[in-house]
Length: 473
Image (cartoon, rainbow, N blue to C red):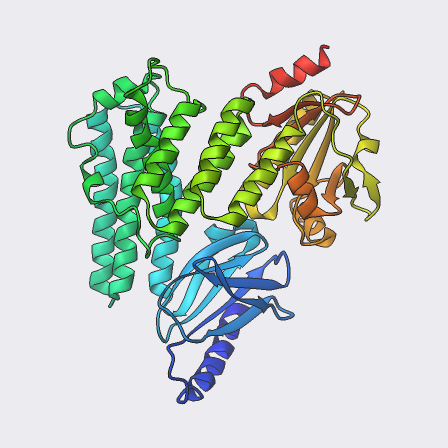
């Protein structure tokens, strides 16, 4: 009842506001919301990576905001590291309610423009659920797999057709909804050779039906409308990974595929350079694949080859500076190097040097509110590892710059003991020094405070072997 009452109050406010817009020639829309278990006191609204405004929540963690000079399309609202997209069109008055404990799953829209957005968020969640099913289908032969993913696509098209017959949908919504279905289907096709259990990817590619990738003839690699849309960008990453396989096998003498192969990665970057002309799309792909390679590779020669390609081809000076700093940081974090003497804040707001608490074989992990699912899964995994390896010291560090209170609130809300939980005193500087990417990055440190592994992963299949190797020295 409380939320319904608030919506009624907002509706009255909006009605009053609309009466005052006779002198405003620009299009506009209203966006408001209520956030349960708020992580901070603001919401950031943006469009196409351009921040429109930082909106402060009131005492009840609610807000109402008028978007002036509206450009119809997908907008992003971000709170506490989590984010989601909303479709705004002229005269929309959209309210949402969400709980940060289940950000996407709890998100519900009401008001003018709500139905289209509830449809889109439900499809987003449905895609996440279906992904596990699709990964299982990937073990089928190609013909059976194609029938299964075709069936999933047809069911979505049928559902969309029913929605459009029931509601008066705009051309913009129709375009987004169809793109969501099509590119998710294309994504399902692109992952097949990688997820299929057979190790020889070349054999898989050569046995696919001739029409398996027919849709590629119509792919727009420079879609300015979809360039900020998650499903489109996910498809592009897998598509370039896949088509690079064919290119790689033209000159590779080894049929055993490794994604870490420097030649394959250079082939992929070259294909991106040749097929993508949109600067934002190209730079995002360049950056993603370059930083991913550097994180996984320990070969200086290969790293330099990838870095050279990126710096020569990229026109993003800021991105090049970021990647160069990242590469330089990695070079200082090799096995045998001393772990950097960074400053931490503990749960009682006491400052400490991290090296003063490393006096045993130590595992250092990180978490961020931006990656909430990783936070929950990693904390559970660490509890298991602590029980299994009591002789190991586990240090867990929040890397956000939202303040100590925000991280403690998240820990306590999830009933996680705050002992050995820390926060960086200088988050941005510390993130750069430790080259924290991806979020699963884990350090294994010996009792002399020297790095044993700087690119470990507590979820990796070899992690416990790496830990035992240190303990048995």
